[in-house]
Every structure is written in structure tokens, then in C-alpha cells.
Image 1 (cartoon, rainbow, N blue to C red):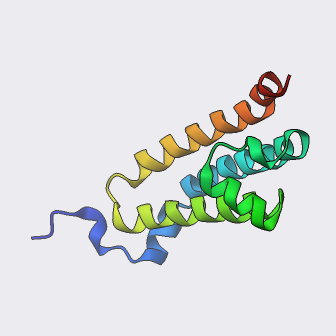
Image 2: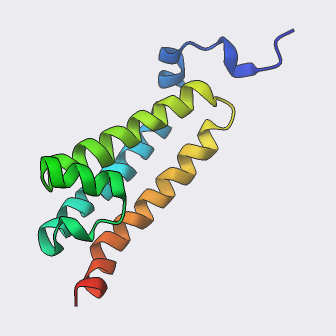
Length: 116
């Protein structure tokens, strides 16, 4: 008897089943990414605290770096969580979306406290 309810779903079925949660998660990390691009244009790439995003922004610039390393990699990580940690994925993705929104707010208003 299979005790894992979600183990019978294919990755495509999981994406369809959780499409609204993935959309919420994607919008939250997109907000964080756009606010990161905004503060990098105002304060510089060196103000980024996340080492992967800062490194990507130094190499690819303050727009492409966050799009690749902040948005794309976080979204892919969310999909991996959905596929492999199926039972906990909704809770993890909701928490990650909340943290991303808070990080985006900090990027917009908190950076002015750090710059000035």
C-alpha cells in the first residue's frame, strides 16, 4: 500500500496541481528580483548581501545577474522542492514567497537606510 499520496503524480501533474502556488511563488521572487535590480542601480552591486546574486551581478551586470541568479535559480529550486519534497512543498513554497516579499520590501525601503 502506497502511503505517500503525492508519489503517484508526475512532475507535469504536480505543476498543474500547484500552478496557483507556483504563480504566487514566482510573483514573489520576481518582486524581490525587480527590487534588487532597483537598489543595485541606486547603490551599486557591492551592496548585495547574497553572495551568489552579487557574484552573478558583477559578472553579468545589475540586470541580467539578478534575473539569472535571483529569479531563475530560486524558481528552479522551488520546482525541485515541489518534485522531491512533495508533501512539504506547499508549506516551503509559501514560506519562501513570504520571505521573498519581505526581502523585496527591504530592498525598496531598507536600502535607503543603508545608503544614507
